[in-house]
Length: 232
Ligand code: FE
Image 1: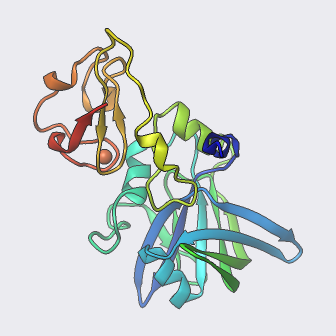
Image 2 (image 1 turned 30 degrees about the vertical axis):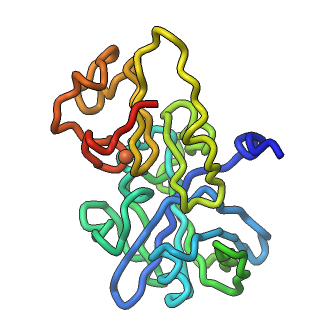
């Protein structure tokens, strides 16, 4: 089986929001699709270990916010690589509570829909939730939606192990040509530091060797420190 075919499937990138007893949580998901239009029903696939799963299960509702192509990697990292069990992900984020009480993004969002869970299917590590759409808004019609392929290829983003589409091999299969400066990978989130491109958002110029990066530099995706990086 050649698992690279999974990289040929097309997806968007979304923040799924859920709430319970006045607490909010959200996570990144690429597995969102529309099942029917009248009534409008969507399906999402969520890892059972995630706090968002628990909140959707108990609150019986979720929101889907559509991320724009120009979303900062750190914003995806905030929702994709941190746990709501440790931080309040919405504390520093512009959002509002939707009609069913789940959070919807008001920044880095092309718009959202909100759905009430009408059914779910247990699929081993994940649950597929089906939700009837009860509200939807477009917040920005000028920008393009982010695709999963763009997230991977152009932003060198990575897939957290909890995502349904995670392919374990991708973390280890990068043979290094001679002479090329060594790339380093974050062993928390899988982000790859490439000396050729540097990390200009954090003031690291293209061409900077990993060893020359200041010690207080942090992984732009998950915030891990330098010691969590290993040479590829
Ligand atoms: Fe990281």
